[in-house]
Image (cartoon, rainbow, N blue to C red; front, side, top):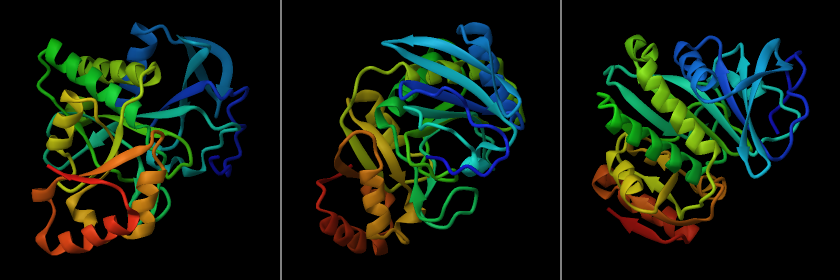
Amino acid sequence: MIKCELTDPPLENQRETTILLIASRKDVAAMNIANQLISNHGFAETSERTFGNPVYIKEIGNGRIAKLAFIDVESVDAQSLCISVAPRLLVFLSRHRSESGTPTLSVHTPGNLGEAVLGGLPSTVSVSPASSMKEALKSMKKRQEEMSLEYEVSYECTHHGPSLAFATMFLELGSSPMQWGDSEAAEAVARGALAAVSRTKSYPAVLGIGGPHYNSKFTKVALNTETAFGHIVPKYAVRTLDTEVLRQCIDRTVEPVTKVVLDWKGIKGDDKDRLLRLLRDIGTETVKI
């Protein structure tokens, strides 16, 4: 459950079959993506309100519904968001920012592998919906190719808040204000969100370790095989990784994690022996790529 600290009422009448998509009203890209869902994909306004904002709803089959809600805080600061019943899946629609400004459509699980620098709780990761993230990644890639969008489509590593005890993912449009306002790219992310919430198939899940913040190797594997990545630990976080957080990354994944995939060249030499010792303690099969 999300810790309730806000004075506003919780989302009402939640069911275990409910899937939530959340957009921050402070986030230009999130509002752009949400507008695509409302304008192009049948999300209809209801009388329900959360934090004073209208809630939109869409039937997605098999007795499941998706709700689109708006919050007045940044998504990374939503640790104290008050939800009465844990949803089946929570999808944050969000902008992505990078120094390079590379146009990017990305997906990742939130949570902190170490210090809580940008929201969330220290050394606490959210539950990773590996199969839903894979479907979103595939859908965004398909749309990017169909529309010849000059964007990269990629997994990001696990990072920033919030740190939540149920399945949570971020779908992001970046990496500068020019892209945040791009309606075609926002439509690609909206379709990724629909693919994530409508998912019916489960894939074998793995934990990825190594490589940069945006791991093109892991992205290529997910796009070309049945493998779905849940949490991803980047090269810069391997040195501070411990057994507790490593176990979290495995246990806090919706699907059973069948193995750990190592971007072997993307791990610093000084960190390799220690990492292998940690993995032996965990006892999960490892594969080097």
